[in-house]
Image 1: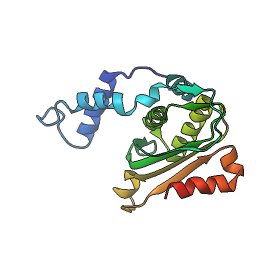
Image 2: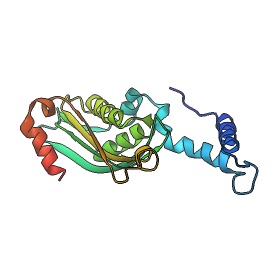
Image 3: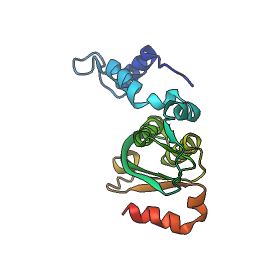
Amino acid sequence: MKKEFDHEKIKEAIRTIITELGDDPDREGLRETPDRVARMYDEVFEGMRYTNDEIADMFNKCFEDVSSRDLVLVKDIEVFSYCEHHMALMYNMKCHVGYIPNGKVIGLSKIARICDMVAKRLQLQERICSDIAEIMQKVCETEDVIVIVDGEHSCMTARGIKSRGAKTRTSAIRGLFDSDHELRREVYDLLK
C-alpha cells in the first residue's frame, strides 16, 4: 500500500476543484484550503496506507491462555468513513463487534482501533464489515466473528433522493454466528 500521500498533488487537485466550481482559490477564505484539505486527508484516509494484514499486525495485542468460549461483544463504536462512489461522508456510524475466544482475547481498545482504521478508507459499508471481520479473525485466531455496522450516508441524505434519517445496517457473520441462530439472536438482543 502507498505509505505517504503527495500533498502537493492533492493541493493542486483541490485548487482545480475550487476553480471548476466557479470560485477563486486565491481569495482570502480559500487561500489555505488546499493545504488544509491535504492535511485532513492524511488523517481521514490513514487506513488507505495499510492492508488488512498490516492492520492486524498493528493491533495484535491479545491475552493468551484464556479458557472462556463465551461471547465477547463491543457495541456502539463510533466511526465515520467516506463512500467510494461519491467521496461523500458516511456518518453516525456505529460498529458492533462480537467474537468467541479461541484461547486468546484481544484488548478491547484494539477492537475500536481496528474499526477506526478500516473506516479511514474510501469504503463501502459492506466492506467495512467484512474487513473488520477478517482482521478480527486473524488477530483472535477464531472463525467465530460477527460485525454489524449502522450508518447514515450523505450521498443519500444530502443529495439525490435526500432521504434524511435513512439508516443502513450491514453485517458480516462468520463461523458459529452463521450456523448457530440462537447465538446470532443473542447478539441482536444485546444490541437493542
